[in-house]
Length: 209
Image 1: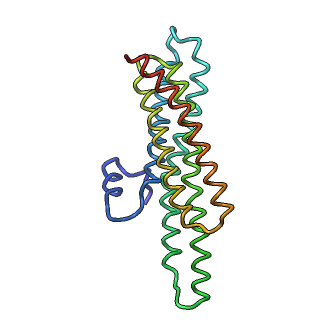
Image 2: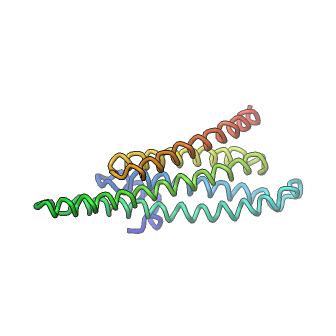
Image 3: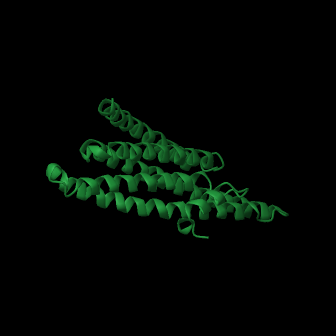
């Protein structure tokens, strides 16, 4: 099943089912895709308007970056589900003998690392998106300011959910160096994102009051 080819209704139905995938990681990626799409929309609503001529070049660049990010996020919606299914396959491997148990544990460790890489990629993309959202909030057509603010909120949410998924996966990985490096990257990325979010959210509140 290709998740990005489902209707909105069918995706919601699939998400709400008893199956564990798609789950939070795919939702994080979908939030990112929606935020990127909103950013691209605001860029297009700004380009070509004579009163915003000074921003045309900036908005053209932002539009391209946003469109590219939307495509990346959509791919990650599917990729997160695919890698989780690999984890489940590893967990279901036989554990009758000591050799089975060793092989199974190695498979789980490897699949968990792959599963961790996807939400980490979503988190990295979310940081790129929040920087784009800053531009469309501050430089975009003010008529679409609330849409730009929506992109800002979705970028933050995408990153936060992705970070949850990285952290829960790390709890099942035995490689201490891998865990420490990934925890540090998550913490540092979230700190940067939160600092930028607070700044841009302050701008939003000042201009909508």
